[in-house]
Length: 344
Image 1 (spheres, one colour):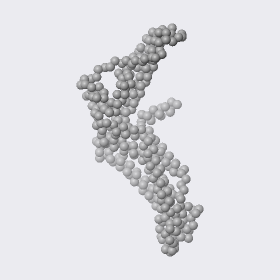
Image 2 (cartoon, helix red, strand yellow):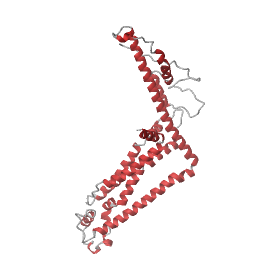
Image 3 (cartoon, one colour):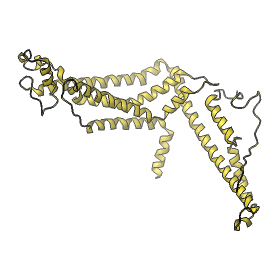
Image 4 (cartoon, helix red, strand yellow):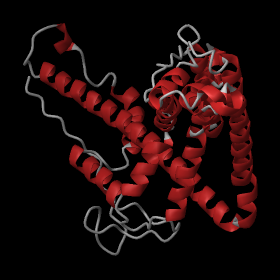
């Protein structure tokens, strides 16, 4: 368990490595899914092309959307794009950098699917079997005597050896080899082009726009880290808030017992015996509340964070207006008091 916990903590602290691992797993999964997929060409004129186009396009689209869904930065990008400007302007370059980073990882699995499909050749064979040049590869002297619908029907059955009956016109093995050769050539060309494009995007582009690239990368990382720290701070505040509420609930119940609202042995237990031990802990929990001690104040804080994030100028903090605290001076400290009313 300790090893798994260490691995999990490493992946949490290295989100880029974690997402690269997820993309690699999805790429291997796409190749495995294709190998396990039962490809059945309909071998009918007009249906072969539609079936092959669906196999070539729909699974890559699903894998691309799945890659975006598994990326935690999608919600961060949407939040940054839709948030009100407030006192912090939105930088389109940062948004483009975040989207391009997510899209590059999400495209790995679809690219693998398309490459494996072309290198296998079954999909290409089913789609273009009716376009085989019979006059060049087969008995061209018989082609003029066949009506076009009959010729299309014969050629559409090339991917299905059990029902193909046109060997007198075109040997099936010749047509299969011809189309698979073209499909594999397109597959390797596709792999080469995507590799070169990835090289240009990852290596060459920062060399020409180094300053803009570094700026976009820095502020993209800042937005991610700021969101994580805000979530951690909210989680810490929620824990402290819940702990103080529970402590006050028990203190109120203890007072009710002492006043005789309930009967039992607990009414005889002195309340001051445990007070010194819990004073320091209660003080520490109240410090974690940071002055936010009621539901309305917390809701206003969250709304202020969404509508009016603080400006990125350290040491020049300005008071919030309208949805936070107002005035030209720092907000005075609030008395950290939370009241619980017992109805027992």
